[in-house]
Image (cartoon, rainbow over all chains, first blue to last red; front, side, top):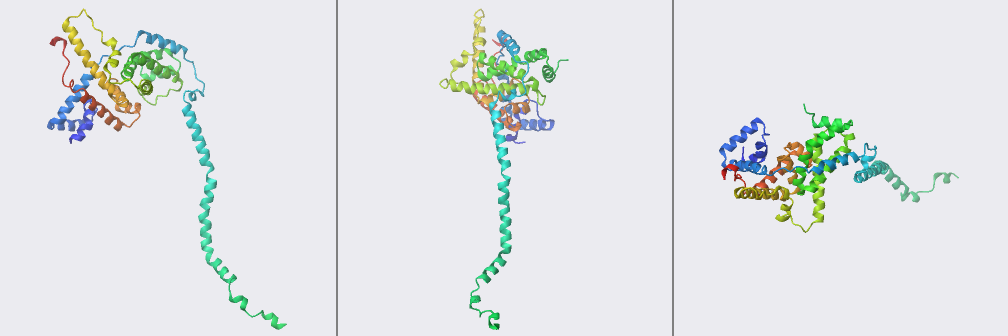
Length: 154
Length: 203
């Protein structure tokens, strides 16, 4: 184990929350590393120092006020009341609903876009035929051809 | 055998008011102390603790034991404390957190000196109180989330997983948050770390 790894384990080590193997590993490192040993000892005495803060007791009025407030609390909440203390939740829910409706309305438009490449593909396939038609329709020598044969027969 | 918090809360849900009184008795002092160390004002801490209990009571119908009761309780308390601290900051922008007089004034009831004590006693108690004031200030100077995490870890002895859920971060993020907080405290309180308080018998 290196010092960086030991650093991340100081608290769990002091809290006694390391697994057996991890604890043995930490202790092996601590036995060899004076810097980490000092740090662990400082953390330990810091914890002791924090224990020096005295606890306070709730005032006598606390319990009386609490009882009065509990007695005044409504006995049962109606089913929609959970919305009331948090208009933000209600607002977020409406936004979500709007977003869902909007997204749901999109596939129609989206479907057209998806179809476009398909039409294009078909046109590409048909392109030689269209070109042939174009060439034939505008074939310049055609008008210069001799008049139809039937005319001669007449 | 004493009923667990979850059993008590389920009884409260079923309409048993006495069980709520038991929960109240079990957690009134831890909550008031936690909130006092968060907001550094006793009156405000008691108001907030009342608000926490009222919220728990109002939500009793919907209670589901999906997490530990203490996780739920301290999560409500932490959110209320953080909101209250932010409101106070907005209200009192001009008052610096570093002003020792403002901070110590809140601790008046803990620093009462009995003049009937001998001089040695008075001297020792003054030293003790100076140490305590220094510790309080060091905790108060921590960023709010770090402060909440340290208080829940040190004084409520909650598990990492619980604290992580309360301050809304991952367990690994919580561990490094806690480490940073304790590291700051270790540096801030360096003059006292490794210097044990004078014992009564040692004077």
